[in-house]
Length: 232
Image (tube, rainbow, N blue to C red):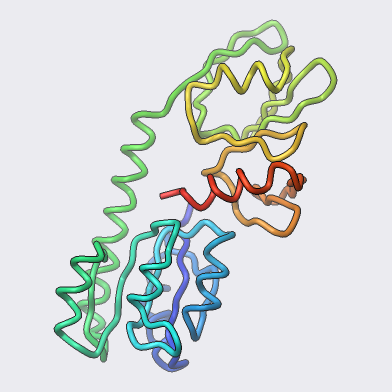
């Protein structure tokens, strides 16, 4: 799965130059471009983003203001015209800080390092992936919990939805939730339990996972938003 990012820069030409360099990496996918941090902050609250490329100089909020207000913590590549910003960038745990005008070679080196870093994070997560045993259709399965997209209640059964398969299990949603050996699931509706790490986007009363939109109830929305915004 490609690593997703957003690009924030008030100068269209600078954004174009960045995109031309980033597009050389097939494993990176741009979700959106922004000319200011305010719109970017609103966007990132409801979308899962792996990293952000942001210019320090922006209208209203600068790059550091953006980082301070983040609730989710994607990796950050900061672009600046001032060499002294590198020290402050270190204090903010920025992945890398690059001077403008960008050196293509330096930027590509940073992107390569970032790709390797994201791969290592993903591998570490997979190594620790918790598993659960289920019985479905007279068979026993060991499921990697990180691969589950969502669980849906249907009568006396639940449907455990994976990317390429669905298991039907005789259980209640409440009972199954209590047995899950992981903490990245949250209930968004009386009939739906979702994997926070699989969410693609959030709208007013809907949660998108892959190409499926699931209902988000008003009662469960505050807790869901809180948990979603805590994602690293």
